[in-house]
Image (cartoon, rainbow, N blue to C red; front, side, top):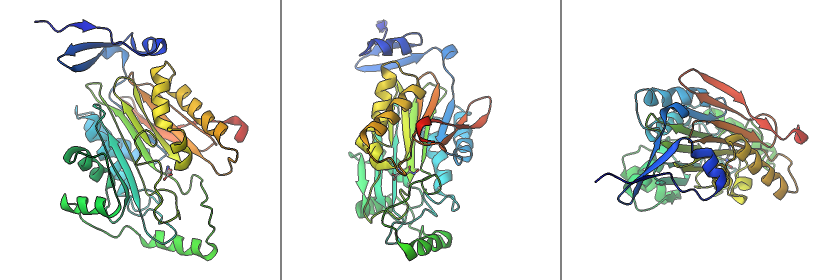
Length: 332
Ligand code: SD4
């Protein structure tokens, strides 16, 4: 019997405006398969935060260009940044907390809303791959601390000292003054968030960081929190965040952005609205940098930040390029 086809029912008119042109759903048993017209969508595509996203995108592109999955692509992409000892806020070489411990947060999410996450993980170079194992091998979404490390070791991950001599030196310098207030600016918060659409039109995302430099021991930011540092909805789009995680968590940043896109906002408009929500909810915006990056189901992308300085890398069939995000002009 032929499967019954119908236009997907969207919760709001705006969503219909965004998607009706290109998205048709076919009901097969209880599953909804999204079919996207190849003419209307830019794919494959991968976008990621900051300049280090350029190299990460290249690794992701190797997979996407060979018809690999968005999930494999985002994992492989951000692993490049995690393993780069010169990057001082993701994985190996990340700046430690104020006690000198490098503690990592990461999460990953696929086109079926499956997700996995690790928080406050130590001594493991590629937390994103541990997050993927949490997603695939457990009933859970998030593992933290010692338990996350124990799970990683059980899964065959090697332990390694992530505090490089360069990061240790920077921490020792910082200790001389030990300013309790962590300074948030583009030098010390370079989380990588990555979003991709593969050849089949499926979306996935990944986010990984060593978090705010010199944070309190035990602090966990937005990056491993689904709906804060990362959110993916294969019917609509995906978003990731960088910057002061506390502010992102307070507004459920990426979940909000995906809902705004569902209601018809472009990726840039959705990121902008989330940034203005952060601005409205925080009296003191000193050093409060947040950057959002979003990608919709059609392969359109956009970013926005509180202050000038946030940029993101975009790899399409045409090129891999770095784009300066728009920002709140009142704050430059
Ligand atoms: C955090 N959002 O731990 C992360 C830090 C970050 O770019 O994004 N740095 O709050």
